[in-house]
Length: 456
Image (cartoon, rainbow, N blue to C red; front, side, top):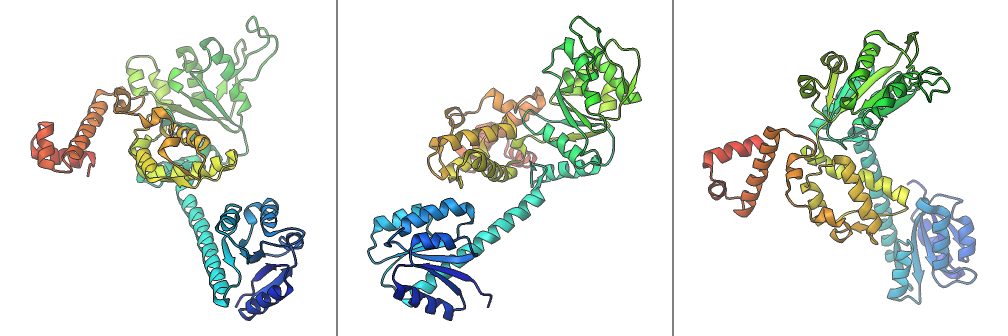
């Protein structure tokens, strides 16, 4: 048997002796302390499987020891089992609130001590297994902070890994909040350019008069305010990656200059005459339909094909509900750390709401709602009362049916039809014949649509 350490803290020498003999017979290595202060000095000297601590002691009592040990050890605190001959329910509750695993009243039977110890060890074993399981899940389903276990996101992960090793231009398409910049960073980090700069620019956030200078730089005197020569983002990103978000907002004159960079690998500063060679990988992103923009002449066709060498389409969150529990766990862990909270989970009604919600703001909206609820809650479980009012009262609206930024009549009609079918089935408690009557379609047509939309 592997020798494990146990710490016994009790002011009665006889009690320390009894527990030492009992535990050593079971193969444990026992350390003892006559009070909490002495025990506090031993707490971090060894790795203890458990600590048995009396409550009523001179110098430092058990509850004070528990508080101080928690401050000292933080997340590395061993399993602490409190003991007292003067126990009350209130004392036990106080001890558990402070972090004790269990509470035993004196006098106790030998079997009671061993049973409590075995239960504590089993709990620790399960905790370790849970940590390992979470690590395994994260390794499989989390790629550079992009989360997804479903087929659609696994395809995205595969695409990132395949394209990362090449300099090819990548076009990332997806609604707002789906994580386009995260994907761009993941491609950069997985490439041999990872030690060079990753530079991001939102093309829709810079005034048209300034964006050319922002991207390509300018020479001194190029315009009124050009007092000194300035490097553009392409120069800053040399050897690395430039991420151009909202590429569809790029003004037409700048589109011509970007096309030259992609064709020839060189830039020309505003007001300059000499071309400058730049080794930069370009990753662009859009929530617009660039194909339609090409047709209406607001985006250059030749630039579109230069950008769309390799396309990654990010699915909206409503199309991958299987990833929502993973995202919740991930952001709970992050927010617990940054907000100094210890929130364990969402209760069942909240989880049900999260799974059914259309999430027009996608992952960004989910994170914001979760963070807001964590600020409001006073407990370790998030309930409906902690959620933002507008989130709870969300009803079926034109915006939610459109699913964010899409303006496709065909796509919106399908989403509307799917929602009506789901409502009809709910109204008829799953009776398809009755639901077909409510929808004013044939039973056969309903069965076809159920299969088409994947509605159970």
